[in-house]
Length: 330
Image (cartoon, rainbow, N blue to C red):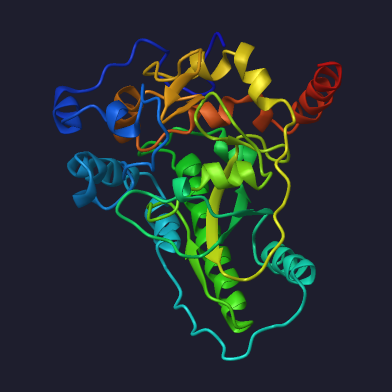
């Protein structure tokens, strides 16, 4: 990329955090996230957990305050934090077979604001340290961005279009996950919703990958075959007997190995060209200590997901076809 897509983006390598921002970083987030660790373990609470659960609470507050300066962002995120009440679990259980319940779950989710849905078994590694989830299954909901609005990131005090679309998708995730959890409860099974943007017990990207919603991209976010990187996630855990959806490999991981677009677009240079060992898995990883200060000062970001070729609806079908041919040959 020779030029940023909008004038609010500094060129890669020209941005430096303010001293007061660096002071609030306090400690490196990379060791806490498990960079360099060769054994699997549960993830530690991170930046979007409650401020008293990690060392960056003050920096999180600054990030929130800056993002709220963007026009319309306060209202957008208020909707994301408007959590409906959870209904009690019905006394009588729906006795339909798991196959039928699975189809009903998918149909309900897609008719209540989710744009895609996947199901997988719970893995202890999906649960953050200090939290507990007893349900055996995870339903992950995908909420698709509006591509034209997403391209406006990052936002500032004159233009809040990009950050407002982020807030709008998180708000959809809140409504969709609570609606689905309450529907499952009405069928006599227990269920708990896990929407963003704040984090709780459930890590969302790994179960989304296991459930076939996409692959991990070099930018550390999910790449969906349907929506590219322009997607947010919400989850529902449950004891309802459901059939898992299949993991899907469509070539995004292979494509990221040679694509440098997000690496070059990232103003603080937080995206590295190669994978790293993180909690026992070799995978793509974004440098926390470089990413988060820019995110806090820029009133959120999203450049990497907006610029990802997979996110562009005019490019994605060609990429899918090209990578499918490569996978067939491979």
